[in-house]
Length: 78
Image 1: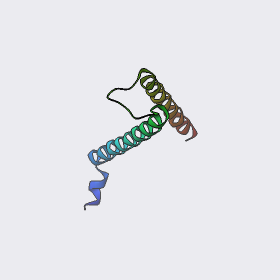
Image 2: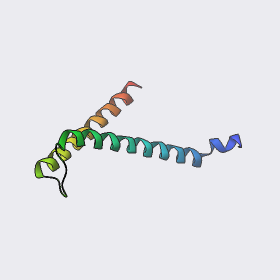
Image 3: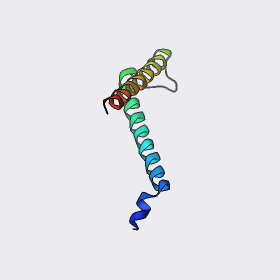
């Protein structure tokens, strides 16, 4: 492979986008796992109960808020 190809802005942009997608997919997986375990206590039916739905919404919001706080904290440390 041509070493100069690794330095191309298009390739770097593509790699950055793929890294972001991977991080988002990882976050969604963790969020789903932790919130599911916390909020769904029985066998789910065809719909979530109102308490399950509310719990999932709140859990996801708190998870996202904490993730942003952690990211900002690390950015400030650099």
